[in-house]
Image (cartoon, rainbow, N blue to C red; front, side):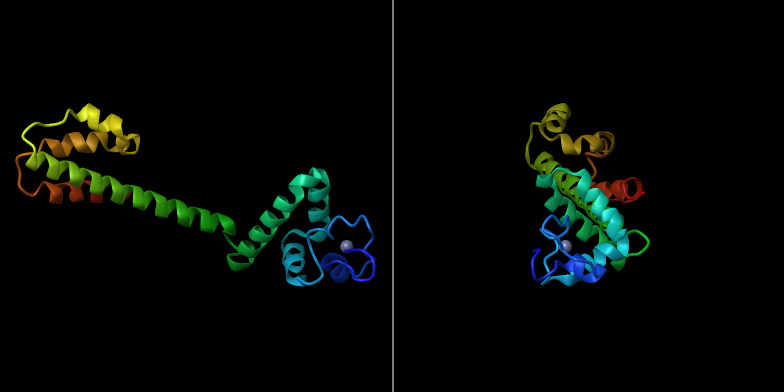
Length: 163
Ligand SMILES: [Zn+2]
C-alpha cells in the first residue's frame, strides 16, 4: 500500500495512491479484479463514501460484503444475492417439511408398536419446529386405525404444505 505500488483501486482509477488511501488496506494491487467488480457494480465514489462512514474496524467486513454482493449481481443481474438467499430459504423450508414428514412417520411407527399413546401436547412441546404441523397431526391421528397412515400423511403435506 502507498509508496511505489498503488493499490488496485488507485491503479484502476489512474490516481496517486496516498498514505491515507481509503481503499489501500482492502484492495491490494495483486488482486485487481476485487476492486474492478466492486467499482463496476457500486461505483468507486460510493464505495469510498460507504467506507468513510464506517469505523475502521468494520471496513474489512463491509468490503467483503460489497465484493460478495457485486459478484452475485454480476452472476445474476436481476436478483443479485437475493437470488441466492431465496434459493437457500426455499431449501430450508423444503428440508423442514421433509423433517416434519419424517417426524410424523416416526410418531406413526411408534404408535403402531407401543400400546400406550403419548399425549399429543407433550410430543408437540418437545420440538417447537413441528409446531406448525399441529393441525395436520390432529388430522392424521384421526386416521390412526388405517394401515396406510404414512401414505395419508404424505398426501396431506403434499397438498397443504408446498403452496
Ligand atoms: Zn490507493
